[in-house]
Image (cartoon, rainbow, N blue to C red; front, side, top):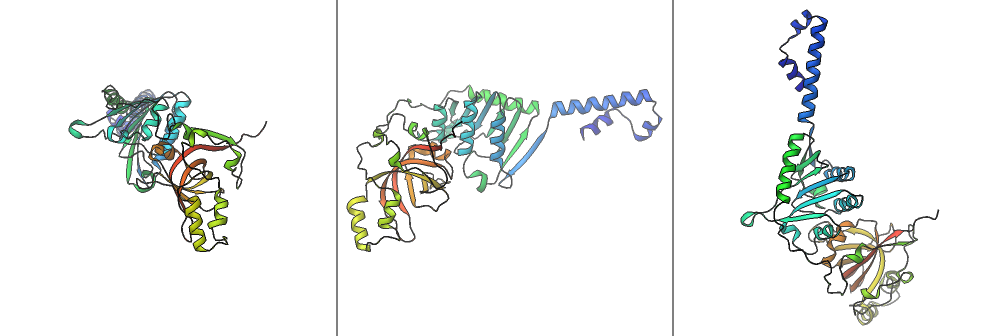
Length: 364
């Protein structure tokens, strides 16, 4: 279309082309080539994508992973584990990341924004005027590519929300958004950031630090190590009453294979297990995706097996929970609340994440 405009600017038609000599034709085609080149340079490319028909989250992850120097983000909210992990990975490889986030989303101390702040991302938190919001949602990658639209950087957006983004590398458009980001980033930060040395109620300094610990242990499918084979941090005990029992051992007492009567199981549960804490290793079979179950994981004791327990974790672990995915193996503590019965799982609450277990690297 733009090349067609170049031809119109040259003020020629098909009849005139037939009467032109070689020299004039060469000159004309040079003009057309110049206008096409100028059009591509000035206007760039633009694309529009809609979800959930297309995976906008993967598009964002891809652009984050491709960025080499800088990423500037102005987003209203962030709870996607994939996007959070992609940003921390980019920061680790030296990409300079600056963010402007809405105050209402960043305010909870357990928000993902607090974790990213600890990871070294440069973050400003803004409020709107007269109770308004910072509702921008755009990203500028390496000062060259813009992604903007309604898309929210949340766990629900990829599958459940009708969203859109516009992608452009038009220099004039990218520059406009870059200038707006600089204006927002220059504003006064509205967040009184908590000290990184704050002590949590459990007595742990920086409560999210244990959850970021990655423990390398040898395991393969169906061979998750027993917590008895791993050191249990005494600082994680916190004066709580623990019972030394594995999920498999509980199944022998309270599962379908139990030889105890219903009354005996009830009495045993109440007298020895209910309200006590356990430290277990397990695989995530299901991870909560909405506001109502963000803090909930369904855990199994073998990779590829059905869940055995529903564990509700403390709200302070929201940043870590958003970065975990189904199939991850974690070490955790939690309080036994309800025993397993026909049609229901063990239910545990007040959970702490001790670390994510990783396969041990093979010997060279």
